[in-house]
Image 1 (spheres, rainbow, N blue to C red):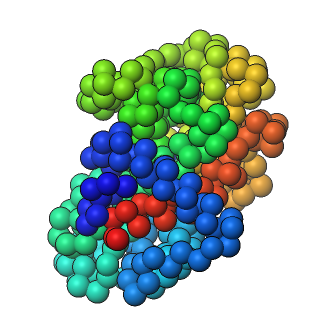
Image 2 (tube, rainbow, N blue to C red; image 1 turned 90 degrees about the vertical axis):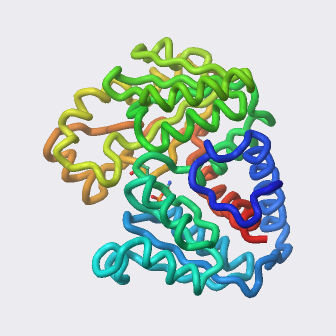
Length: 329
Ligand code: CP
Ligand code: NVA
């Protein structure tokens, strides 16, 4: 992507729609090379460090495999195994790591913190999820949508559920930038914040995308090309919010009925991890406490041919290559 060399990737609002499109295009090229078995160690000799203050499966593994495929050395640091935030400030940690590594991935809590890391480290920093945004996920999601419909502009994209979380925020931004019609479908208490909506409305004026906010499932899912959801309680939120969220969000479960309002060729997406399968430890706990057999998506929809969730997960790896290559090359 043009003009990203040496820059950080902190939130999509820092990029132009053209730069986002370039990243998607480059991701497709990396995916084609991987599929064809063509080596692409374009960043040989560089080293990156991955800092995680929250847990991860996809993001961590996508960065590790992407880094190795590009020929780089990769270090993984979890909060338990470094000084960061306990004995040593983030600013000092950033300055130390900036002396040793060519790039830093950070997953944690506040958006300010990842912005500070970029400011102090002097090397490109990639946001691997904060409380506010999940920008690398967006490139993977848009690649997945494009693979299914051959285009992005003009598609109807509906997010169901907690529309003020990091993933929903980022989806509203990327849809605005790429000309998709974004609908947040959920309770009024969990709609995106006003200042972010205003920023997106400005972008929509240029791209022709539209934004819509509705409490009605029928209205929200009607004629959708994509129905997307995420877990009802995000990392970093206290367990005590579960009861309230279940009450507010149960009507917005993605089930056969919700999918039936969408277009026949509509796809289902979820950034994962998902609570469609309650055989996990936390899933079991919640089930025992609240007696809910299914949460944000039913097993039936999750396992249906309309569900593209594992393509989406795989695309994290191809798209993170594009992000790292564009900023480190
Ligand atoms: N979608 C996603 O970011 O997954 P992980 O939390 O497993 O990284
Ligand atoms: N909203 C979720 C996304 C996980 C990838 C969270 O922040 O926990």
